Amino acid sequence: MIDIITSFFLLVIYSIRYLFSTGENRKKAKADLKEFWTDTDGQILLGAAMGLAVIIFGYWFMMQINF
Image 1 (tube, helix red, strand yellow):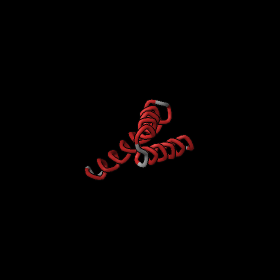
Image 2 (tube, one colour):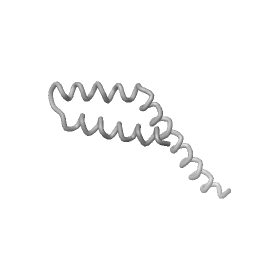
Image 3 (spheres, one colour):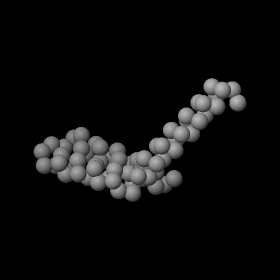
Image 4 (cartoon, helix red, strand yellow):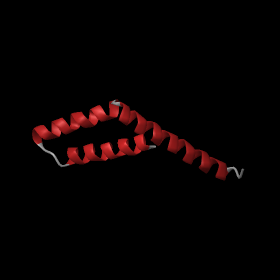
């Protein structure tokens, strides 16, 4: 759980840094953001998001067929 929170925090920090930088700093921030997604932290966050989507879809589906 702490890994997911840390990954989300890093994503927010890298995104803010990318949005508010210009020129050479923006290129560096974009490279850092791309590295984040291909690194373990990005994969953890992607897996958690997909798991949450499956749970929400499953709940919605069960409510539709009145189980």
